[in-house]
Length: 258
Image 1: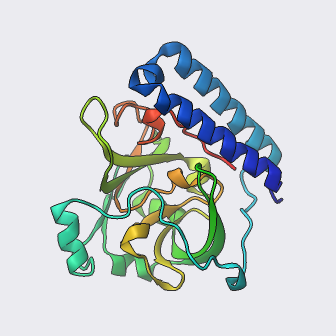
Image 2: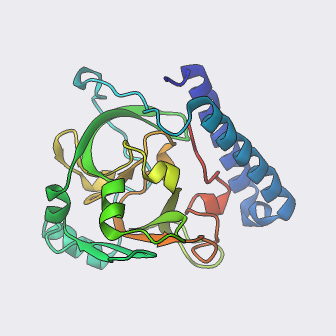
């Protein structure tokens, strides 16, 4: 089932407005109990509405190579100011390892070569940014579901948290490390992949090399770049400010469905 374009546009504008209000009011506003209740109420309504309309299984629309955008804008960070990451990049990420831990039976340390031996999926999809722009790109990677199944998720786990190499503007508490999270309904969706290629080439650094998340039924800020670690948790209250992501800690919705 395809999502109506006008509805998608409305949701992007609404998300941008909510984020602008939260950020414009500074951290004190975004932490005010009454303001958080308003945002949480709106987010719950959006989640329930999308689940009712689309369910959990349908795919986001996929396109053809003729539809690829000639220029695909890089969202968020376009480089990583971290010595260890830069050293890995200089060596083509040969020494990079994806750590998978937390509430799993078999913690993993996976190289790019390991990931490339796993089942892969290629999809041509539209990336919708909360700022209002969209681009179509071709992504290849391993389904997140396969990585989770290989690690063996423990029964008490409820969320998948992605810890990234990039650091954005610090918050009042001095932290700015990017992170993001998903519930299992989206984590196990067939179009949710850990992408290592873009448009048939190794993932470029501005787009999140060596590995980025693609979760095609949500807005772009959910698609974490420079993924270094995947952690399975029961809740994310103790991570960042406890809202489930870098931008969520600053007032954006945790569920960014389109």
